[in-house]
Length: 148
Image (cartoon, rainbow, N blue to C red):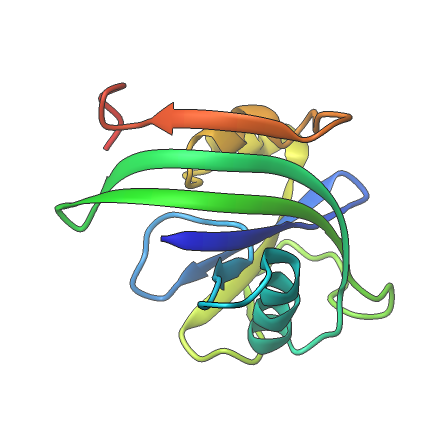
């Protein structure tokens, strides 16, 4: 899988989303289509999910991850970008909310509490609170590490 994800941080809160049929949270974003550049795909995904025109900022991580999802071995390559949303949309709140994409819910989480959130990929729990100054390439094998 080739994906692009948005790291949206506002006043020490991060925006996460989840499907109605999922128990874990992820960053907004999704699949990069064949022939599509990752930053353009991310802006498309954010517009589809949240109904807003965002601004794609700097690349934070390139992540190769092996994991199990619904009893299947998956290999994902992800580009994670800092993304800014218009200041007048999506006010901070502690409640879950929906936007444009059916079956997807969103919530702002305090970065100080992110370690206790079931977030995927799991490396995000340790890294969202201290974003690197330069892009990092991470190779993660959640299967080998025994994370399921």
